[in-house]
Image 1 (cartoon, one colour):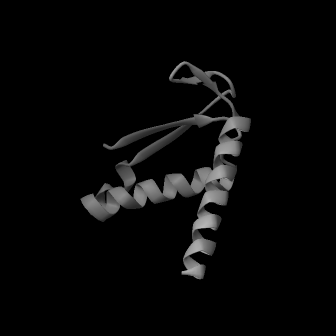
Image 2 (cartoon, rainbow, N blue to C red):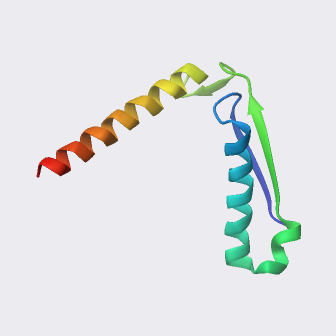
Image 3 (spheres, rainbow, N blue to C red):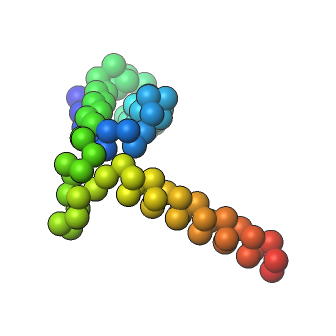
Length: 86
């Protein structure tokens, strides 16, 4: 029985995104293991309070995650506009 344990910062993903993760991960197992595996795929999401997750000695917060997402969006948009100029 596949058991997938997802941990992320509380507030980093909304309920719809969490449900999408559960569905998509289940579908990945079904693609590989066949439809019969579906009832046995267990996906659990644990939300960790902002600031209680450390990465490389740095406390990870929801604000930091949001700032990183915004920076990636800006970089992607800059790359899109650059490719349109070429």
